[in-house]
Structure formats: structure tokens, C-alpha cells
Length: 263
Image (cartoon, rainbow, N blue to C red):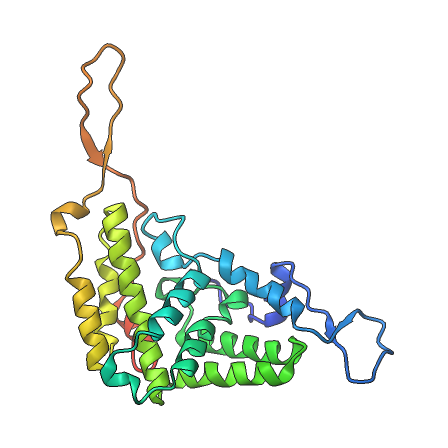
């Protein structure tokens, strides 16, 4: 669980990750002694962390080489293109794709915080908002960054058709990954089915139900390892449970705070 006594700042987080943003060059100015940039390339380098930072919830179940934040957002963006027909007419799909690609962009600096980290949702939101403000000030392309932040804020608020759809996509994509990991790793990930209670749109509830129908049978979720035979012994093996780190139990209150309302 994270220690909250030391106030988190974007600058501290960047320094801890050895990330340096050059000063943004003011128009017509060349007097600064610090290296300056008028391009978004330094920001692009920061985005690399979305490719290398793993989604933390799975690691608590022993899945160390799981999806990255970028993996999650990319599949969401593709899923947005396949919006159910009953929703499609009322959606700006281009905006939905942008939201899907941007909704976790602040995690390049903040990291992927989960309910088990013990960081209140209000504090998580503060960190992410501060990071988006920092991106606007230091991206080298303020106009584009302002629009990026506006799309992110719209997603967070969840009050438009696009943001409601993409918030549900966020949860549906998690369910897809849950079923895939249960199938491939034989680990019971039932904790994550909680998100189905927070999916708002009936069309997306049906997607979620179809995905849950694909879950492996409970008896197939007891992972097994084989004990190597001793020299000279018969080659028969005895199945024993794989050692999986005990997940940190998330209380219903934590889950409600994290996934409840407009996530």
C-alpha cells in the first residue's frame, strides 16, 4: 500500500523515473539558458511508459508478463469502432476512439493505481489532473494538448453519450482480458467480475454477459504444477497447486469508490 504522507507532485514523479521535460520555447524567444523545445517529441518519449508499464491488477494474481496500459487502450480503441448498432447513430465514433486512446494517458506519469494500492480515488484524480495540466504546459503543442485534456475530462465526467460508452468499454475490455487470463493461466479472477455491476448501457451489458459466458468452468481454474520424479522413481507425477501470490482483498467500499458512478 502506498505511503501518502509525502505529497505527490508531477515533478517528483518525473524525477523518480529519470524523465526530463525540456522547457517549452516561448515564441520569438531565444534568451533562456536551458534547452528548450517547440516540438512534442519529449512528450512522445514519456508515452513510451504506457507501453512498458504493466496493468497492476493482474500481477497480484501472479501474472507478471501481462498487458501494458497501452495494450489496454489500443484494444479499447478498436472496440469503439464496433459500437453496437443501437448506439452508433448517437455517437461520434472518432471522439470515442480518441477517448479510448487517451483515457489512461496520465498513467504514463502516475502509474496504474488499483483499489489495492490504498490511494483514495480523489487523490488519484488529483494526480491525473495535475499530470494532464503538466502535459498542456510542456508538450510543445499547447492547442493539441488542450484538446487532449478536454477529451480526457469529458471521459472522466461520463456525462456525454461518448464518455458513457467509452467508460463501459473500459470495463468490458477488462472482462475480455480477465477471461483470457483465466483460460491461459488457470487462475480464478472472479474479483474483476465486480465491474459488471457498474456497466450502464444495456448494449454493453449484453457484451459483458456474452464475455462472462466464455469463462472456464470453475473446476478448470485450479492451476496445477507437476512435481518432478525423483531419480529411479516411476515417471508418474503428482499434481500440486502452483504457488500464486495471495491477492490483496479489495473491500466492497474500495471497489465501489474505484468503479462506482462515473469512473
